[in-house]
Length: 625
Image (cartoon, rainbow, N blue to C red; front, side):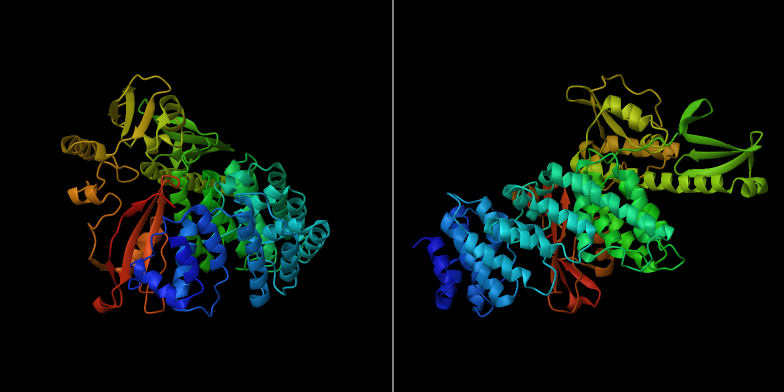
């Protein structure tokens, strides 16, 4: 009997399920999934349909077999026969009848991956739509439901559109109308972008493919602009202010998806819109500490975690400084760290920095940082960018210790604008530093001509960039390291030559020591650890194991500090403690724009103290599956 046939029988026979787990050598190891690589993609699709019918009354062994199949499906792309597609629709109807809810998306994915002619599913599709629309709670997957309704027929689709547009807000009503008018394949694609079902993985590049749909892109802009218009109206008193009521729950979801599509496309109109929308959802029009929509604020920041841009990071930082609710401050601080980590790996936009009308200042005849001058009567404001941006005032070329009284009295608006500018520039510099350092994980390389003008010669960026060591490819395979702050003469190289940050891992001990000595001698403080960066060369054991390391295994560490480091460095990890499921976790971070995933296995060491952690196997490295 084939492995697929044995697994199929195990889903209905509890005794046989125990035997299968024993044969697969996972019966005693509850945390290990069996190897199902011998099962074909088509067999896996049929098994997944059968697994979908295993209910809560099944034995523990049957449930483990079900989870093993679902786990394998989450790591692969199952294929489905026409009969399996039909049976999956029928299984969803049974589940909806028994539990009052069923996610229709797996059936749509099955049709997308069908191995033969598409079966007629109009009957079970119509029944499923009717059952889901009878719910007393909002439909969780409206895109998927519309796609299923279209399979059931025109009248079912009309009823679904009407029902899904009730009491959800104008943004969602517009969205439903747009999605209902799309072709079936487009509806299936859009049903993927709001999913988090690990058992049926999204289609590849779902967000990028949604961003290529002209109708949905147009909706995304309309939705975000209407949201900004609404918050403007609330601030102007045209719409009565009610805390947390600016948008419906479903509108928050739709606007988050619209923001992601616009961010994927890196739309030119987006920065100015976020400059309106973020303060609009974060600040009450009164002095109240409440927010018009805390939910939308967090959803937009989560969108930034997925597809960050420098402008959005700066806008979030600006809002964080002005929001009045202390709890929101703390939450935004945590979320901003994840956004910065993600931005560093989106190398196509990470280092973008506006000039903001700054010129390059000169000190002792040499180019220094950026400078911006503004007149205010007999006085002049000077915004200077060195390591950070600062605002000072002068009269007849002489610096003053504070803002002159005539300026405060007659030019209050200018003073506020310049102070806001300083805050904005400092936020952008922090974003740039995080992005530059994050470039290490993706081995970011830039064209030399662009680097000279947009980084080394940029009035805002130059003070940061010049204090870092760079490598320039002066000839094929020949890299020359340079510290611009210590050497004004950059090497001659064509504009299309490659430039990258120097890393101590690529240099010998003598070269590393020489750079450290030079920085110390010149008293140059780098924006982040570069020359003094710790490095860990692979050991022979790690070269053999390749995808995991035991270097830090079996260590006892302070858990709160470790958890804070997870949050600060962009790792995802659940908190551990003396509760169900709190005894162990896999902290995870994705690197190189999704090319690699690193996991740090650790357990809560209650025997060592209430605040101690035992490391297991850190550094398990593999491509995302």
